[in-house]
Image 1 (cartoon, rainbow, N blue to C red):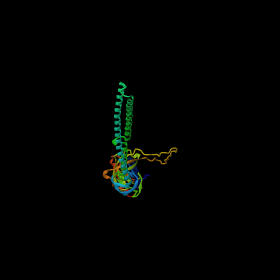
Image 2 (image 1 turned 60 degrees about the vertical axis):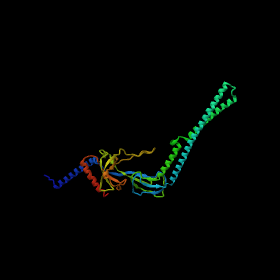
Image 3 (image 1 turned 180 degrees about the vertical axis):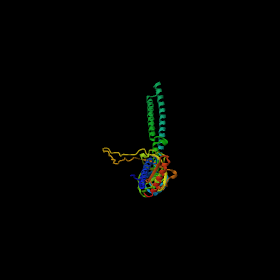
Image 4 (image 1 turned 120 degrees about the vertical axis):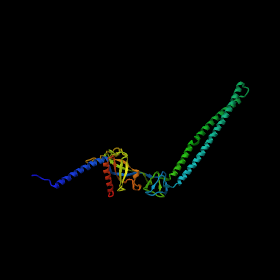
Length: 364
């Protein structure tokens, strides 16, 4: 008895075959694209976040900015009451003038001590010559001069020698007290450094932006006393914004610096931006250190498949397709796809996929 296949059964088998082949093709495409056009939704907008604080303490006198205001390098942010630092600067300058006068006086003292020493040297030389003459006359003819006169001449010579030694000691003391001469004098250097420190503190009462950025988290107002180093606002450096994408290890096999990247920002749905890989992280911290005397903590993995380790990949926007600064928020989420090969087919399907994701981003 011959059995015939009905058209409905033949169509069912054909549909099942098409479904199986499609699933196999999709699975192969997933494996290949995961290596050559890797995609991740674990990406966030990053930038340098700088806490802004004064280097000196004082009461806030003026606030020049408001939240979400863009500032350029050198723009004033806030200012402290400078009165106390004006007084300190005036005192430092007065001390410097006093030290300068003291150094000059010490220099004159050294000159006077040296002049006194030269006078004692001359007196000693005269006394020595007179004593030698008296001694020579006494040796040649003891009756020429009296012994008393000879002893007086010898005593005068010894007194002159002692006075010369004392004058030399005075010169040494005056020189040590005066220190080095000119700009190398230690007292003068210390006083000048105090003036520079007072001038620096006075300038630091006016806090300026160190780079171009966006002011956020403003937490102060006029009249508040702030301590040195206490942040009062945050400056987001918008001149250098990048994407930090966490990709699995098997995604990174063909990824290298300079590869083109498609970027989808949650804050800008429907638009795909272009960028390039800046760098690839070469290490992550996988364990927390245990304190001494504690037992190690073991994490039990009950999954059938081990979770893949992820590494950070830094991605920079291209200059000709940079999103508006107002649309970028540090910590904002993003989707990225890296074109790690020159395969036109894979890149074509990758562009279709990221474009579809950009449309879906309107709904989530």
